[in-house]
Length: 335
Ligand code: NAP
Ligand code: ZN
Image (cartoon, rainbow, N blue to C red; front, side):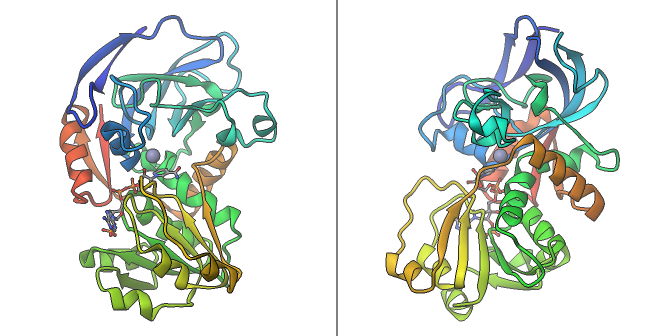
């Protein structure tokens, strides 16, 4: 029960290799979860490659986890053994700071990510503070809900926090793991939705997922054509972009919100923000409260990830496919 078996990276960019460790005694506020599914988020790929400069090796990636509680610490009151739960980017927080007290635990300065400085979900088990083990609504299947635990909340929160509504013209940039869920939530918020993609072959599916329009971003003239069109642009791309082109695509008072974590700086002319009273924002994942709400909305609006299933032992294959932008739309590892 204390021995956890997973797949770890031992150096930047290396293949995942078998790894086991002794997790020690279960802490009073923790639950132990037997993992059935874990999504492969592009953030895992950034961490594997040390794109952000803070990876510590060896570590087990994985932070889109679904499984069942197999043990609960002495102080755990909110979860029970046998319950199906999901875990996302965050595994713990201080619980007493200003942000934790107001239910914004994801903003806690001592936030503990699930697979940074600790071991995540490409494994048979994981342990987290029980507050970060979120019950999964019955109607959602584990394979399709796992990607919502990080990918889903990361697109849901900004749509909600920026007040997207039926009058909004929303663009989702990059139709990958996050983006394909973003189209579905943006539609559920009632917006007019445009998909921006480098992959022409995603057009038909983007439209079935909720996009009214499709812009092929390989065609530079296409972005110019939609200049001044959007109230809210959500960029989920993991690489550098034509940021100025997207600011130009905003209507006055519009916001470009970045969730994709490209390691390079953004080039934007200040005056292009000033004149139209435009904003550039960032957004992290979300709190446990937000996760509960997002899963409830997903359950009631039929929102789910389109997945490509891999055995846990084939995690290297899944990661390689994510790097080549060949997954439609989220790889999920299963035990
Ligand atoms: P993903 O599945 O690989 O999807 C990214 C999509 O971006 C691709 O499918 C592709 O879409 C587009 N793309 C990739 N390379 C591109 C390039 N060079 N130029 C233009 N478009 C490109 O990745 P993901 O899991 O959705 O994650 C996306 C990003 O969000 C990553 O950087 C990840 O670290 C970050 N993330 C951030 C948070 C947060 O808290 N803010 C949470 C989760 C993930 P098309 O084929 O449609 O062009
Ligand atoms: Zn993620």
